[in-house]
Length: 131
Image (cartoon, rainbow, N blue to C red; front, side, top):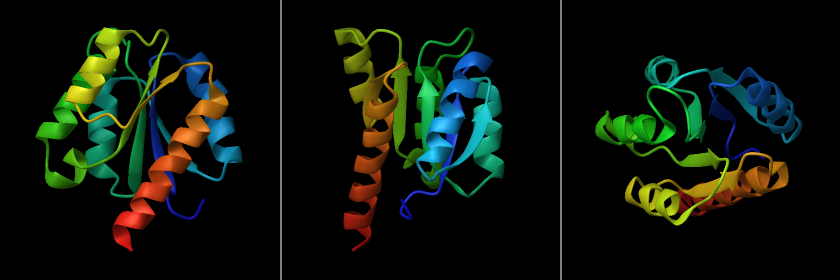
């Protein structure tokens, strides 16, 4: 996909980062990883190449929801970035919170194909907006 090139993958678990990075790279994306919301925010501020954030929503300390809330309050470039939330269980409360934070999609953590198709959808939406 030429549309989206660089993804920031945020997960406190090295296991999940190591599992998802190759999947994303195989799908043609550049992947930058962060192991916490704090690291993710500083990476986002220093790397203007990042176009989509894929974050675990259930992290110790500052959760993925906290990360997205901080992004939405940041400068316009960060505030407008599409976010895909990774979650162990997609409950109604998670969906509601995600909607409130304008999270594009919620994907179960082990659903690799779901993640790739969610990214493709964002890519398509970005292209139609630009057209």
